[in-house]
Every structure is written in C-alpha cells, then in structure tokens.
Amino acid sequence: MSWTRAEDFRFDPNRRLDAYPTDARIVDDPKDRVKKLVREISERQEVLFADDRYAVLLIFQGMDAAGKDSTIKNVFSGVDPAGFQVFSFKQPSLYQIDHNFLWRYWQAMPERGRIGIFNRSYYEETLVVRVHPEIIDGRKIPNKTVNDAFWQERFDDFRNLESHLSANGTKVIKFFLNVSKDEQRDRLLRRLNRPDKHWKFSASDVRERRHWDAYQHAFQETLSHTHTSDAPWYVIPADHKWTMRALVAEIIKAELDALPIAFPEPQADEVAEFEAARRELERS
Image (cartoon, rainbow, N blue to C red; front, side):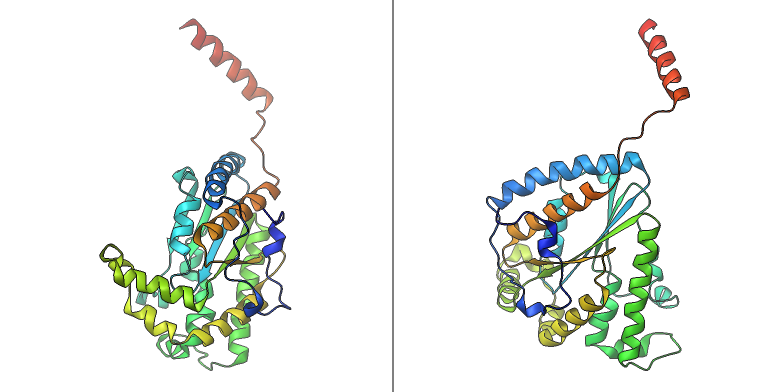
C-alpha cells in the first residue's frame, strides 16, 4: 500500500472537497485486504465488548449510490452481530418531527461495548435540508428563518453533541464517501439496466442529482464546520468500491487500535470462584 496512516484521509478544512480524489486505486489486492481487516476488526470488537467502557459511532454520508450500503455490508460481514447495530435514517415521521431534530438520532446511540453505524445521520439536517430549505416549513420549530445563523446553530449542535459523546466514552468516526458525478451516473444506470437491481433504484436519486453542485457546497460547509479532533471526518475516494471498502476498514481498525481497551482482569475473589468452579467441574 502507498499509505500507512489513517490520518492520510482526514479532512483538511483548508482544502476544498473538489481537490480530493474520487478514484485512488492505492490498495494492493483490496478485496483480500478487506477480508483480513474484517477479521482484525472482529477481534477488536470482542475486546471493545468485553472492556465495556467505550462505544464507537460510525457515520456514513455521501451522495446517492456512493456505496454506503455495500461498504457497511462488506466491512462488517464477519463481525459478531451482537456487537454492532446499523440504523438507516429516512424521512422523519410526524412523531419524530414533534421532537427536536436530534431526538431520533439520540435514541439510536450505541451503548458501551458496541459499535453503532449510522447510514446517513443527523448530518442530513445540513445536507438535504440545506439543499431543500422548504423542508423547514413542515417542521414545528419556532425559528424558521433560514439564514447563515440558522445553519451555524446546527453546526454548533453537531459539535456539542459529539463533544458530549466523546467525553462520555463514545468514539465518533465520520466517513464522506467521495464519488464522482460520472461514476454516480454509471451506477444509477446499472440499477436501471439490471432487473435484479431495480429495487435499489428510486426516481428521487435522479431528481437529487440535478442539485449536484448544491450538495457539494453543502458537504463542503458541513465538513468544514464539524471536523474536530474528537470526531474527525475522513474523505474516502469512492469510485472504486473495493478500494473504498479497504480504506474504510483500515481506518476503523486504526481507530479501534487507538482506544485504550483490553480484556478485563479478574478480581481476586473472582479468581477464587474460578478455581472452585474448576475443581467442581473436574470432579463431576
């Protein structure tokens, strides 16, 4: 591989998104690399679960057809399902709208010892909502003046939420899957041209594609205002799917390795209980 650090893909607020590559085939045998990393992630997840002090929240954002679903599926294909949970957030219900806009996401936060995965997240509130500010008209909030201050308050909310999570033992890792407009078109066409992929196609994908430039601006603003040392964004080239999956897996593994977790050492009274249980079992 031509890179050695997860930091190589950390977002730089001083760098524009259009300067980041979308197709970077920099991983040798990426499919085999993913298989190896899945085993290592599974091992670290077991330690995370046993340690029971920390949680991990993985957030995946990107344009339609960027590869969020397949990346989550492949990177966690060999991980104990008891150790992680996936939430895919769609349009909020009327019941959810009756709460503050972060409420439904808060309900899904991972408990200690587990990995939580958000396939889209509260960041949609400064992405799709920013591209379509008319959505605010349907929200039951007292301040509906959609201006720069409105978006800044939401960025502040995100940073404060993630700061609180970090202070209480949840490591937040955020991925922007950076797919090119041409590759997105090709993937959407493949969904249309293959009957077994029709279920994945939505006409809204084409409608949203018309707002490509507005979405790129919204991503630029969102990443620039919410990238922190406690909750970093990683910009992942997404045109080559297996390379993308390998990079995501590599970063997750590196972040898990950085957590101060270990299998718990038994207390003296527990050791005595273990010895008593062993003797009883050996006699039976």
